[in-house]
Each structure stands twice: as C-alpha cells, then as structure tokens.
Image 1 (cartoon, helix red, strand yellow):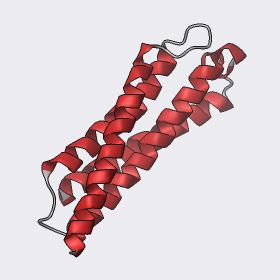
Image 2: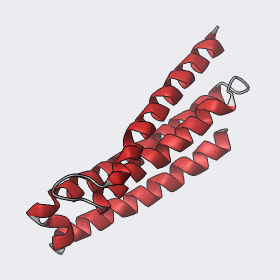
Image 3: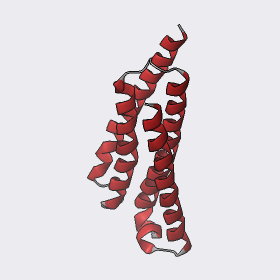
Length: 135
C-alpha cells in the first residue's frame, strides 16, 4: 500500500497543480468560458475540483506514511475507498462544471456526495486501523 499511495499521491499532486495553472491562465487571459458572470458556477466547481484533488493527493501521501510506519495492519478496503474518493470528488466537481444550466451544476455533480461518503468511510477505517496498530 505504501508504494501505491506514494505514486498515486505524487501523480495526483502533479495533475492538479497543472489544473491549477490552467485555471490561473484562464483568469490571466480573461477566457469568457471560465470568467463570465454566467459561468460563475463553472469557475466555483472547477476551483473545488482543483482544491479537492490536490488535498486528496496529500491525503494519499499521508496514508502512505501511515502504512509505512504501521506495516501489516491494513486491509484493502481503506486503500480502495481513498482511491475511489480521489476520483469521484474532483471528478464530480469537474463534470458538474462542464454541463452547467442556468447556474445549476451538470449531472456529474452526483459523484460528489458519493465521493464524500467514500472519503469519510476511508478516513474512519484508517483511524480505526491506526488505533488498532497502537494496541
């Protein structure tokens, strides 16, 4: 799990840092598709996608450190849930920003609560696993 989450974490950070640079470039070049008042929902959702993706990349690095410090105490479940949430949360925000209609997010936004539940479950299981490791 350590190598898997180290790799996923660093690559996630790279991808979402590039996304952040792209968002800043759209600000700098005053791209209407991103900056117009009618696209405020898109701007918010894509900013949330960038922020959640980068922070989840850091969460993977934290989990990698945790699995390294406490080897042999982890099941596949928290790892898989953390991976799923790292795709569902930012992906839902991004897809929701693609299909905005009248200020409302597109249907892809449905992935966000699913991703949030997988993240909450993963963190809960990681907390339990780290508690058992101390016993």
